[in-house]
Length: 398
Image (cartoon, rainbow, N blue to C red; front, side):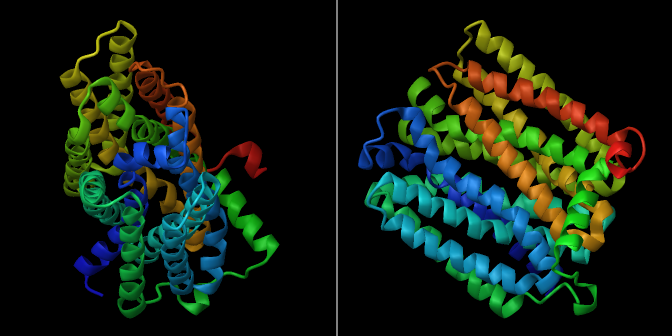
């Protein structure tokens, strides 16, 4: 597989997650009405059920892929994602929908773990950071177009057809990977699938200072990102009254993230992952504090809020790929397990942090400002921890 196709297929695999989330945003009111969800904040369960499945299942796919190889796990996950899309489409109750969405998240977890592991199998260091930045740049195109795609579906059909599109995406990628993506983990490099080996790999990931530090920092930043995703429809539609224009504004904000990932890919080998991500984290925290201050004082201007969100998402374009690459870099020989632990902590933790803030939504911008300010500050503390001391955590390592 040529480099360009490699980047595109990895980006597409990771983009399945963004697609399953962002295409749903315009449909949340219709889904709420279909299942008689009385409280508007409870619509967020459709997003959170998926994220819980996506986050928790990653913990198990890593060791399995380290033992059995990447392809079989990837193809199984894509098949499960496609089948769960049909289950969501056919749901007749909220409980059935949440179960199907949870299973869909489990299937997509395999694609995320394997995608990152395949990159680590193939690249290291700044080169891996560049590949991840290019992947992020491409897959960030999905949040740009997904809400508009969901809105377009709603203009001609009901919300169930959105899941038909998710099924098609999973099926197409299944065929593509079956035909084109080779196995990247040689048989001689595979690890035994036993409790001792898995526990050892888990402990090494959790006790490597850089890995756990940057993983926790990524978790905090994901908390801000997921808070934005869960509250964005209510903020832009209910507070600012955008209506069908909400996907357009969401796309512009997502475009900033994609553009920042592109710039990061161009600069990372020259400037370094640590410098770029550290600067972006400081700016992320400062912008969050500014948004919180403006929200507390009751300043509710559409252009100011959108501009700050645009800058915050641009920071994520520098933070996400670099934190992920720096967390993975010391753990090449256990890439699958490391990817699963990092993905489990950052995704599930970020989802819970985002959901916690989303449930605080009270018709004001304060919960959003609080999310970015609090989680940005926590992320900076985690980065400082990752960069201090030795390579392992003494107490745990002992």
